[in-house]
Image (tube, rainbow, N blue to C red; front, side, top):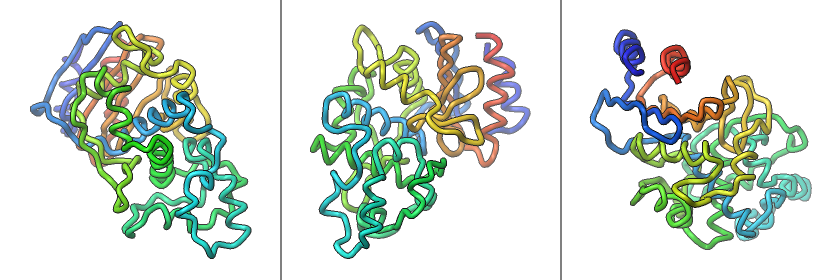
Length: 289
């Protein structure tokens, strides 16, 4: 199955570390161009944040329609204007999950308190629900999980997700004030990532247990907002042929293909070739599933 894929990767000098293909619950193909080890997932991390949000909502910690004022009273600047405060009331969990706050830029924060900084930024365009990719949204979403559960997000996911998937001692990044980054920084192996995709393919069910609410999996992975790439769910990208993916910078990806009952996980270190590698997967593997 992977012969043509490997040939194309080598021919085009794509810096792909490895690939795992699961079909009908069975690993049918695997190849490592480099020894397998835990690698930076970049924005694939966001899909784990989404998973934690879904679990916390299902356990009654908060609602998708709750606004940020409910969770961050201590971080809201005391001198913000009434208009700013009124706009923050419209920054809901749902708006964070859909990346639909166009006043939140895609920049990495360098200050000492990320929460206070983000909440101090005016959101005058909050009434316009337009896709604006930003790490700020997923950072806030993860912090909400931690505030309400009173647990580190990785700790919260440990018994609920990681342990059933056989994933131990997950590495990740934290903000200066100690919150899980939420947007990037997690490290996993390609096989660990593929098992995460398998949980979603099976609508939250894995190894005899319902790990994630089926309803959340459906909501998180369907198109919630339009994008140039074809749509976005709750930190999952919609993809062609009714597929969706957890996707990170430099070619980290976990593609879930319901119509083929398959998962394809890839780890890479690419500059600007992610779409080319995805197309290579489509041309050489998808048609063989």
